Each structure stands twice: as structure tokens, then as C-alpha cells.
Image (tube, rainbow, N blue to C red; front, side, top):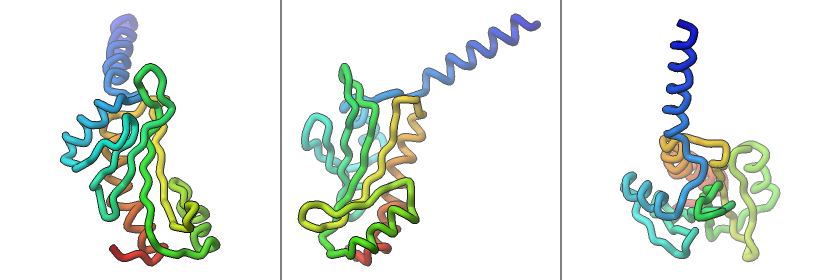
Length: 147
């Protein structure tokens, strides 16, 4: 009985491991975006412009080795003047994303997902959805931006 339970645990562990994403290729990202119905434009091998929300969202792949990338980063920028102290309040109050001013003084918000430890495809889908439906609207409200 003990051997049987050990075998079941091993098979179950292998089955669960099969569904984990430990890095993605640009082609896999394109497939995921198509599956989700996200309109996108490929700007570079590791850079996509998504129509997830208003404004458009940049998706960048980083930490790439041998064709697989271990980091997915989402970002969006806004043409709006924002006081640096007010922008820093975002970083203090909303720790899982970060905000900054670019060289022109425009505010940006970024959110990253590290895939190297393994995440499910569903977690990757949810990451995209939450950025569009939760992070961006809250950030736009925070900086007083109206599309």
C-alpha cells in the first residue's frame, strides 16, 4: 500500500509539473494572446503592444536564454503631469506594481511576473487580466487620468 501511495504521489507530482510555465517563447505569448482574444502588434522579437485596455499596454519578455524568457513585464504610460510625491504614494500603497516618471516626466506603471519558479498558464492569463481590469483603472484614478 505504501508503494502504491508513493507511486500515486510521484505521478500526481509529474502531472502537476507538466502544467507549469517556467519561461515562455514569443510564439507561446502570441498563442496565449490569440487564445484570450487580445488584439496585439508585435513590435520586436520580445516586445508587444497590446490593446488590453485604454491606454495600450506594453508587454515585454526579459531574462531570455535559449529562446525561453523567464520574465513577463506589463507597462503603460500616460501623458499627464503628476507630482513625484503623489506618484511615490502609489509605490508605498500598492506594492505589487511600481510607478515612475519617464525622461519626459510622464507617469508609467509596471507589473512583472517571474516565471522561473513555475506558474500555471491560468496564472499567466490572470496576470494579464488583472493588470487590465484592476491595476490600470486604479492607477488612472490615482493620477487623475481620464481616457
